[in-house]
Length: 533
Image (cartoon, rainbow, N blue to C red; front, side):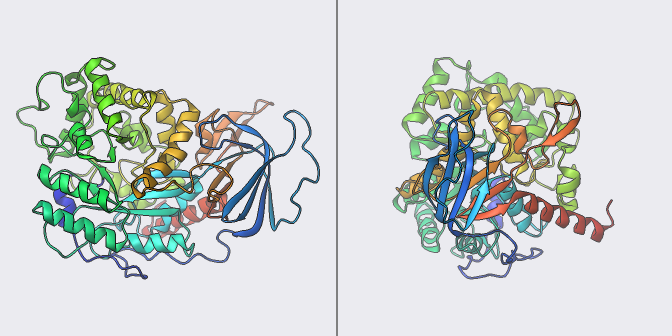
């Protein structure tokens, strides 16, 4: 949802990013090199002892197990005892370099965020802020669509530095908006679209983001060329182009992923080909645009009816992946809750808070006069939208987890957990939500490449991207929030539990609590500099 229109995206087009350390965009701080006290490993042999395992495949939890990691790969998963009985003592291997006692804890694959942004000086001048919040919440891989935009784009630079672990960041996969980042001029023909895709592939990008503001022939050419170059495609099917290319048509053209809700309801209209807007509607007025989208609820076919199922069956046949990003619009149904979330005081930068405030300039800050009626409309909208995602999943369609951070009172990491909660609200079982967050997300990134994903499940031979949590997330996703979860203990006293304990990325063990402390220090430093309490 990064920009209001693709026109705005194209207006940011600038020089191509370099593969070497580059000058950051104006107002941005460079991502610092990983310090010696930031993460440990990878180790010759790391052993995680006595854990319950949720492996990401969809299989139920099992344990206790010992997980052996050699370097950056999972070597073996071994039984550690019988449930309900003491763990076996002195279990092999004993020649480890690091041992983590995970008795009573849960191990999952690292989470995959397939809708990421970072690098905006108006919101978070140091990209490490977002990277560390992602890691602190167990996110070990991010598809940036795009991580940065426009001149001095550092997407590829950060991708390379993350791959060699010289910065503290998840694995990064860099998509670029069609037409951005090169000096070849406007994308004004199908051939120009193909040239740009070839340039992006040669530069090292992993995929193309489309905003469908171009004529259909250009969109079709970009998707076709991307497939030839083994680049992924994801579309934010904005209102400016949805009359020509909605989600149904995009699927027919071979699009890989529809992100957000855009294009779905326009494919399901029950009475007419185009949505019905008020006569005084102005698409560029964000409050009006986001409110009227919620009113599509009354314009679509019967949820679960023949036309509804036919649409989903066609998308399934075309292999389209749905990336709903429920969380990023959740403030629209309860603004007060979003504005006062537990984590803002300690973990939200003042610059980000300023960006979130009502504004006619800042994208996504459309709270000019956000009334009860508007919130009610959005609560109604979520019903069929969530059902669409759940029905698609039940039919065998792939649904993934993306947070779209940095807008609408959502920072980094925290909204990813909220997305899991909202998938459960939509009808996903907790195990299905975890599968969407791990195996499905990894598949979404690697399917266009024509290879199996090397992460996303906990199995021997897979990359050692893991999350270790002290509470059972299938019981309560809220225990994944970095702020933890309050409950009564056995003595009736309030205790705060949860949060990720360790995030392991590429065999490197990060202390999630330390990462959160570092983010809190960034926030305090900015508050002091601004004289903010």
